[in-house]
Image (tube, rainbow, N blue to C red; front, side, top):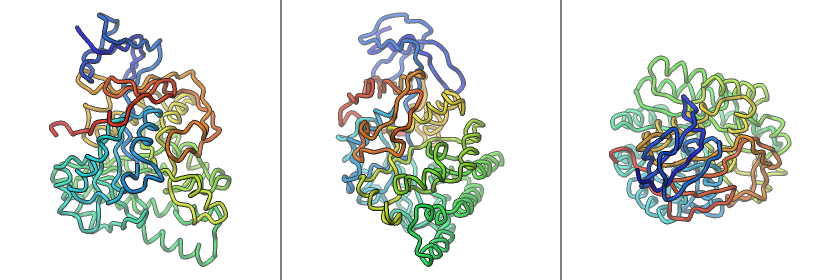
Length: 450
């Protein structure tokens, strides 16, 4: 056997097993997996007994490029992803112009092609009047479609009538719909009271983006998924009761899944009271009781996928909200910290490495139809890996952040467990915290047969 790369002495982690082995890579794909090294390769990496996981498939990033490069650009954003152990990113449609047609999608793909360090895909956008553009975007390479059930980030809310037609259309060609679930009408009524009371304090964000608004919209999404048979991913679920509702619907045959994000397992109201605009995102931080419930649900296997919801802003944009929380935008960075936070959760006994391989790697790839090319360690798959040292302790610091924003809401937090090497298609793009990958190395991810 000839090979370009051999990774030896690794503890290989899959969703169902952990075993000692060696991985051979040829032409950017996994050629073979053996228990012991059987032959040499052009390059060898000694994992020295560390764990080898598939690279994370991050289904939820907002690179905001083209159009908003004061916030992030494709090179800094994917350098940050590489540092964080993410080997594939799926970008959402909120760049400029918004990705609502096949022409815009293909233009953006060409734009990204020379800029990304890791592999990438895109979601097309769902608008109130672009139904006829969904199939062409799918045929042009979109991995799925994203929409909002509330007016947020300058994009319109989608009513149940609009979504019903969208889901019927997307079901007809086998696509996936991802939804931000907050009820626009409930949010609007809550905001009216906050404005009438002239509230600008940090906690008014929690009283605006209420648990009820997420609850009602999520149950609407569940009902629509059941009615249409469309595959649906509910983005950034923040409440255990909604994880239960989604799991129950899938038990009834619905093709609906729950994404969550690390912030919902670590942050609570006390952090909103302290940090204000620097932890302003939506759905918002919930109570400590809800956070603890999310951690229990995570360990019970009720979370289907993990996304970063990487949505960075320059520090000054957040500072603007220190006196009036409404002056700061919604969104936090996440691609550099998510794998570290999830590994720390493993160290804390909240979940296992095998569960992490499922929800951070395999299941996102399955939901967006790029498995088994991505998200797994098996012959024929792309050679995307992270080498993990579960004994390494790191303190997250703003000074170390590669993302253009240069800050993290977890500044000063110490994590146990860290990615020490990231490989994309057999090439090392990060080693010991230093990004070695080059802009333009990342490829567009295509669906099997695409």
